[in-house]
Length: 379
Image (cartoon, rainbow, N blue to C red; front, side, top):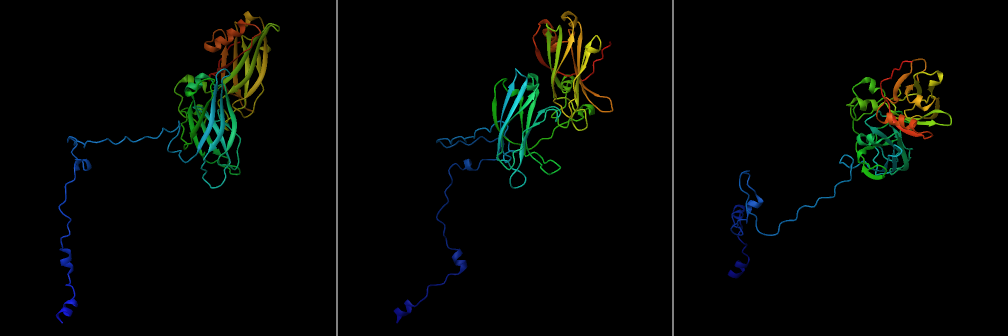
């Protein structure tokens, strides 16, 4: 009876207060060794705590630097592969656009793209070149070469090439913003040696305009303001002339081959250029010549030749004035720039004049920067 009563006895019930009061501590808390390493003191003047002996952790490894021209802004805009070649012997800069990779157009689907090039600082349309449009691809392949004629060593030292990957607007009236751009300082180029680039595209940057409104006419793209008079004058453009004294004909052959990077004089950002030649002092009507007019261009190619008869000694005492003008129908023509060749000139102009008259039957071609002030000569 007593055994059955003990077996049916229930265990004593423990209240919540008694349960929480039970000592469940595993034991005393041990101090952490060198706790100062984990919790450094905030006092800036306190001496650093000694570190425990042992191998030091390896320094963090840094990734290879990004290719030249890359930036965080262009991480998602794609990349452009191209090659640059500065042909110093022929005064030309060749830019070959190969392909673009990973383009990110604003709208989904395929995209029609082309590459646009500009030389900075300078007028946008004076140095603007572009490739053909490749349609329906986010990895377009152009394999097209853009050439800047009249590109000298002085240009390579101070100019920057700006390349933009643009979307062809097709039926839209307004052009969209470029998908990305990049800039390459041309002073890094080695003459007559091609250099390949693979550079990530960046977001477009704002450019400055010159202070003078006369200089700013038609020049919608400038990277910096012209600081020196010589620099500003050179931005009027340049002309490629050939000189040769012909012993058979007994006179001087003057060839007007082409002009490059002329200053835009019309409201549309272009000019209608032609070239005038004048041999001073005046020896009759045959002392003045004029080329044909080329419409709506800043890089005309004339390839016209003119002849001035006379002995070499007499021509050496004269002055050849070459001027470039913008043709305007019904109004006065606008002066773009000029160059004077004579024995009183200096630099390459003097060398070009003396060298051609010093040797017969030898054709010499040379680029000359244009002066922005007309030269007045009395008859």
